[in-house]
Length: 200
Image (cartoon, rainbow, N blue to C red; front, side, top):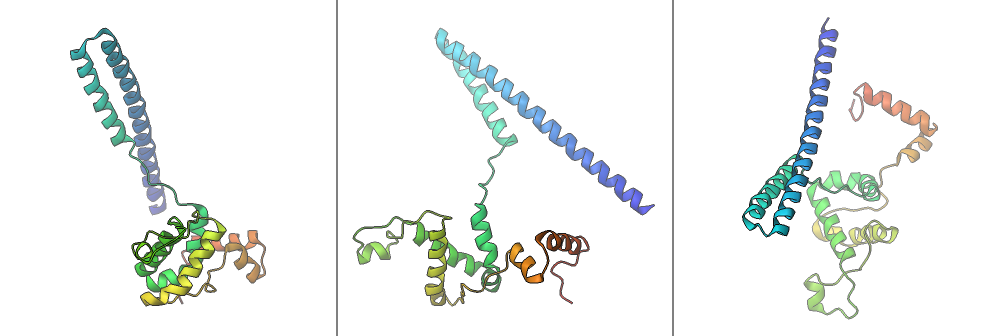
């Protein structure tokens, strides 16, 4: 009985979410149509030289632009999958040192991506105006980050070992003696049972 009630509640929640999404999309379409009409009327008023009407329609345009922004806020940029993989492989370093590890990685990133200066002076290097000029998320970039952390993390009281890498799913499957499909199926089963990451 409790399972049926839980399923019912989940169904109601899913329907409400679908309805909210439909309403949001309808509002976006309506706002776009209203905006296009206000722009058309504003431009027509400008062509006629009717500046009072132009200002009224321009205010409508501004209102619709603001409404569009509130309904469709900018999303944060997605992180490059290569960077996500690199960070995941350095899980031990990041878990051990927390925010300090992320700050060290950010400092290494800043230096690696700062423009390279042909004739750096002590003042320009000290002011952070000299770097390696590398493109982010390239093999050379990741190698430079590893090298910078290896050389300088200790200066900030951190221990970084470039060999201390988490296994990739394919490496873990190979180490377990299973195929990638078998390994992933087992991982999904453990995760579904709620046992993933639990210590016994």
